[in-house]
Length: 113
Image (cartoon, rainbow, N blue to C red; front, side, top):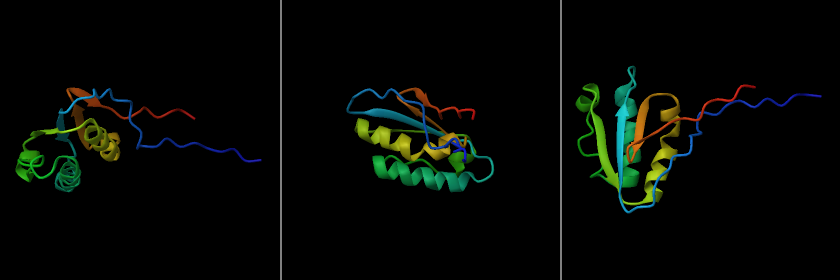
């Protein structure tokens, strides 16, 4: 017989209480020291998917290098939740920090086998 091993996944997030509302405030800080430009491109693509080009206005390489926390709004609860799901691998790896309505989105701790 073999034993089935369960490896922790980095794509899971703790449940984030996102209130039902028309507008949500989102803040993103990029903390990757090695490849901040590549992470910015990934983040910018996801921002444009949920908030359009107005959401990514001001997110430049220079701003990321200076430690700028990018702030924008999304127009629905679905968009805020979708952004958190799409950013889950970057959040879990510590490359970015995401806040939704002032609440930090955190990865779920890995379970010990």
